[in-house]
Image (cartoon, rainbow, N blue to C red; front, side, top):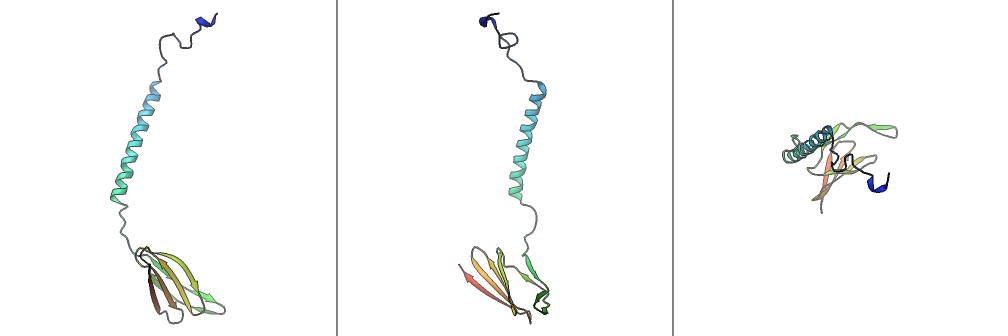
Length: 122
């Protein structure tokens, strides 16, 4: 056999055809991708259906040294802000909230539960 007579394809002129199962798989996966993209766009436009409620920061029993302070209260988080830091001392709890418009510092007296708010505009 010489190199000029060797054929790479089965019959020389006929191309190899893809199996039917592979064609069906490609079509099904293409439809699935289109459906998933439509669902993602619809979910972004409609939203998740949950109502936005202000979140609260719960403050409960805190132990400092030998004298516990029992504080059971919920502090409403300012709308559109997130809790950045907290600091507790013997007489007060300091919560720092931050949003794009302003920072808010909430100071809670541990003995009386009285709340003071300080807003700092950005």
